[in-house]
Length: 67
Image (cartoon, rainbow, N blue to C red; front, top):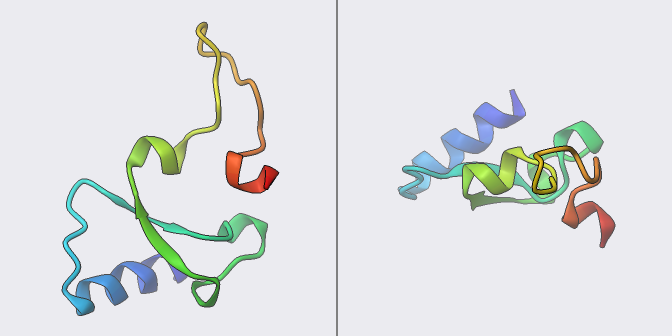
């Protein structure tokens, strides 16, 4: 429901989110919420972890989590 509320909030504000994903500043799977903030990101950046040239997973920790 948090993901749906975030999308509806941006739609209500009139934000054009075509071709973008609504990303949470703190991932919902890590205990985040809409109160922590949301932003628009490209689907590739929002849905993927870092991989090497053979497409094997390099890290299960995103760049944001490392900070």
